[in-house]
Amino acid sequence: MAYKIERDKKKHFYVGIPLGFVLQVMAMYFLPGQPVLATVISFAVLAAGCYGFELFSWVTGIGCAENLDAIAGILGGIIGIGAYCLIHYFL
Image (cartoon, rainbow, N blue to C red; front, side, top):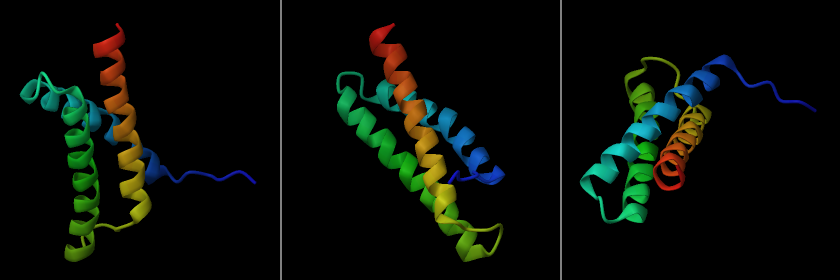
């Protein structure tokens, strides 16, 4: 059985890609000699930001807060972080 991904989940995923990339660039800039720590920190900030945005939506009532939105953003961010690591270390 195929699962149809909702449009807003795709938007969260696509927004997460550049967000993860930018967070990884910033973490590598501030922690140049520690790539693993920079990656862990950028992931932690990504996850906190995605869930924080959903929490803000839930508390204020602005928008619709869904856990799958945060998960889609985090998955996109992982792609962005991975893309930076591939470009930086293998190209």
